[in-house]
Length: 456
Ligand code: FAD
Image 1 (tube, protein in one colour):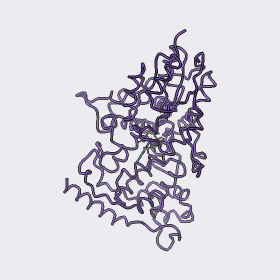
Image 2 (cartoon, rainbow, N blue to C red; image 1 turned 90 degrees about the horizontal axis):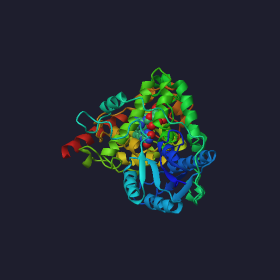
Image 3 (tube, rainbow, N blue to C red; image 1 turned 90 degrees about the vertical axis):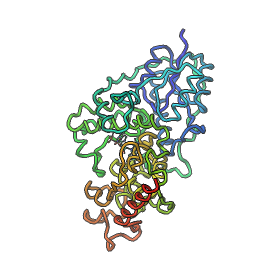
Image 4 (cartoon, helix red, strand yellow; image 1 turned 180 degrees about the vertical axis):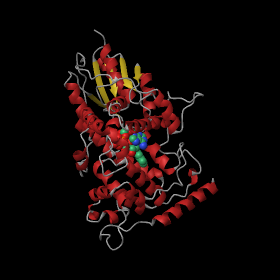
């Protein structure tokens, strides 16, 4: 009998379109394992919302595996040590896994490859990051030419089917109990809003895709309106790999209409990996001068007001409260809230990146860092600092009145005309004054920019 094959699962928690699983099952019996090495020092530890999602996603994956005669083995520790031990215990000859591009995963893959026979497959991106190259063979730094080149290689291959059965090993190795990993919050249990909003797991991801595909033809017209359900809300499912981008592409492509805009968003996801492949510390380090010496303000009170959704700018506060309650924020509002932190409050983008990392269910090292550096203008792609978004204008332009009513209930009684910027007479008591006037903030930000440029 051939020796079993280990499938090392990470941010690819699905059975369909899972090339590592498909190849392992072709070779013999399969031992699927998830290793919690999140808290080893080499890793960037997951945020609270991600840990909540992971718990439920692992539970869902185990149930799907059991329905196919298999199960999920849970182990804790350094990936290389755990996999070497597991291979020794079970007599497994090979470990199959998908590539991941966060710097800590690339380091872990190198260490694992020294300890066991590691076979890595592609499957979490439209095209393998690093494979879309310029005419001279280099990697792209700017989105638009990257997307043009990637688009030419599309569509991605048809997704692999979900296996009906997965061959089990003669004996199952021991597994940790998921509850012992304490991924869920207790004392306080702040996850009520997450439970109301999401159902992690592959089945739910496929349902969401099917529902979105019905509406996807009007994506371009709806996607910027936070009061509408105009986007797919697939981001946490994509981040945890409960659905592959190829499945999302093929599922949505059938819709026709303005679906190309949606496919371009999947392109941004690939682009972000392409950036962190070139700049592994993008989540912590400015890519562009003069940001090294930027005169950021240190204001714990302003930072806290932003985090708690109490800045006095209704659209910003609505977004930050949506984030706290559901672990997700509409993309247009993410842009407004991020710009507000960086330019109105003049607080270092890394403070915002960390807050999003902790509170988003879709917190993704590449996507988060690329979007924060894009907003601040410190990134490789564009110098956006002097483009200062006007939150009140954006709020009216994108028709956010009902969105504000939902997330800032103390303003729910105001008219559409007043709710974006409640005048002093109608601003309810208990709702904060603006932390800074827009014009003043703009002038302060531009002065800071001049100062940084002069010092560079
Ligand atoms: P849709 O509009 O339906 O898009 C489909 C998919 O495309 C998304 O699920 C996502 O995987 C990808 N996508 C869409 N927009 C972007 C983008 N701008 N950059 C990269 N990928 C994109 N997205 C994350 O997944 N994780 C993050 O940590 C994250 N942090 C962000 C931080 C800031 C400051 C900003 C402005 C944006 C951030 N985004 C992040 C990008 C974007 O806001 C979310 O991907 C999107 O809102 C998710 O909702 P959706 O699934 O309905 O998106």
